[in-house]
Length: 376
View 1 (tube, rainbow, N blue to C red):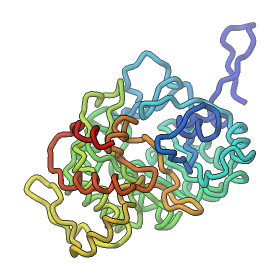
View 2 (view 1 turned 90 degrees about the vertical axis):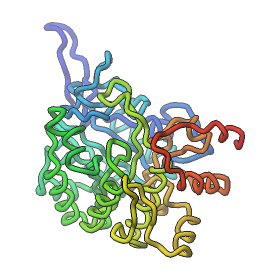
View 3 (view 1 turned 135 degrees about the horizontal axis):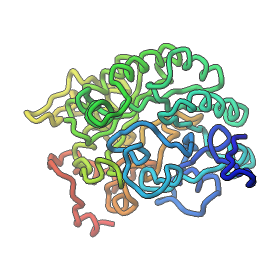
View 4 (view 1 turned 30 degrees about the vertical axis):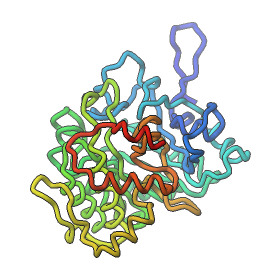
């Protein structure tokens, strides 16, 4: 157990750091019965999201991240919010108990997220090993900058069955601008894509995924080209919509237009499920998607399923997207007016009506249409 002696001759106080402790998302804490609360429209979280935690914090300087080393806030890193909510700290033993005592029997997966800090290499493997006998499906969201292919083999042997890589940016130029050299960050575009290829080799094409964030400067065309690149390598895309984090460099950056996000969601689904290809899609002069490359009949079939607009994440035992992250990309108010960016539940008939309208919205900015308030 890691300890710290604050003053000579004074009692030693326990430091709540990984691998004995982890932070959990607010949704995960609610699911495990650690914090009271209820999900909008009775959504359920099927994946317990865990984050390695250290007093030192993350050494990366990603411009959009609430945990960035460049974030300007008065709180310590451990007390910082992320995705607009608190991430409370719990011991691994508390996590194991919640996963085995019947508190959350519907949970089908856990995901362990690294940060950019040297200690995270071995600590991630340690946490995987501790959870291996508790839950059979363990994802690791890794930091390519601090690992190599041998480490990927080791974390798989420890018990991880899926790996995620947060590439986040759709182009090298944007990556450098928000994650790399332009913000004095340590991450490199080439290293991230090298790790995507290595992860597919180690874990297999069905067990590797990348994260991409819509709305940090790319066009729809650039985003879909990158989704196709990952698909061609054997990696699916887990899609996020940008939401400004307080204190981050991009705290004043707007959310992407809702129509743009809906089109990318549907196109990602088409690409990831091999229904069609980016190469058959058409775009206008500013890179907006105008044709999904499907026949009208196939388009209607795919659209009516509704799954394209649900959270894209790692599979569970019985559901395709166990990591469904309720409210991960929007506020509860936005969800209540039909602007749920990633649905953690199946869209209903009213949702689908709004989704159809949004797909055809080519606005260049995002605004809440107050007419939605009259519909709910």
